[in-house]
Length: 305
Image (tube, rainbow, N blue to C red; front, side, top):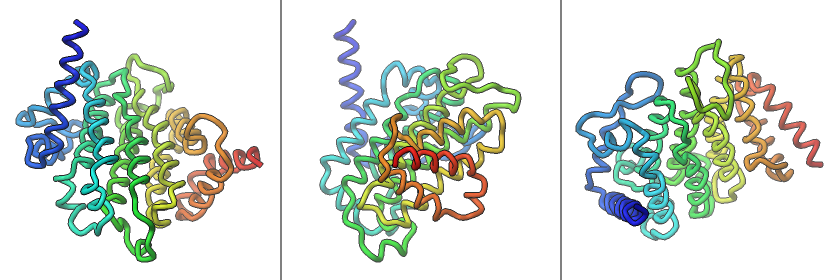
C-alpha cells in the first residue's frame, strides 16, 4: 500500500510539473475558462469540460486525500527559485501581463489553482486547510527574486508582473476570509478550531496566513512603497468589512493578531514600526473603521520598547 501511495504521489508530481511547463496544456486552458461565479459568494463554477479541476474539486476531499496542493505548491516554488527566464519576465514591464500574459504563466496558474481549490474547501465545509499556507511561501520567494526598486516604480499600480502576482496572492487569501460573510448568519457562534457543522475553519486559517503574506511584502526592500501600501489596503479592507459584525469578532481578532504578530510571537519593533507607518498612510476613512487594530498595534509597539 505504501509503495502504491508513493507511486501515486510521484505520478501526480510529474503530471503537474509537465502541465505547468507547457503553457499550451489543458491545465492553463481550464484555469483561464474557470472565472464565472458559481452558487454564491466568490465561489467559481466548475464546468463539466474542466475535467482536471472537477476531478479534484467537485469533491474537494479528493484534493485533500491526494495532496494535490503539495504537487502544485512545490512545482510553483521550484519555478520561482530556479527559472531564470521567468525571473527576467517577472521583473520586466507589466505590459499586457495583467490581461493576457498571466494566462500563460505558471506562477499565476498555481495561485489560481489554489484560489479555486480553497474556495471549494470553504464552501464544502471541509475540515482541512488544504495547505493554503503555501501563499506566504509564494509571497516570500517572489519578493526574494524582485529586482531593485527604481524611482519610476512609484508611478505605477503594478510596475512589474511580480507586483501583480503579489496582488493575486493577497487577493486570493483575502477572498478566503471574506467568503465567511456568505456562509454564516448573525446568530452563528464562530470558533477558530471548529471543524464540524457550519464552520468556516478555512477562513480562520486564511486570516492567519494573510499576516505572513503581508510580513513578507512590508519588510522587503525590493518592493516600491506604493505597492506595499496598496496591498496592505486589500487586507485592511477585508478586516474593515468584518469589524461591524458581532459574530465575526473571533475571525477579526485572529486577523488582527496575525497582522501584528504574523508568526505567533512578539514581533520585533522594526516590523511593528513599518506596519504602523503603512497603516497611518492608509485612507483616513478606512482607518476610522479599524480602531481595534490601531489600539492593538499601539499596545504591541509599547510592549516592544
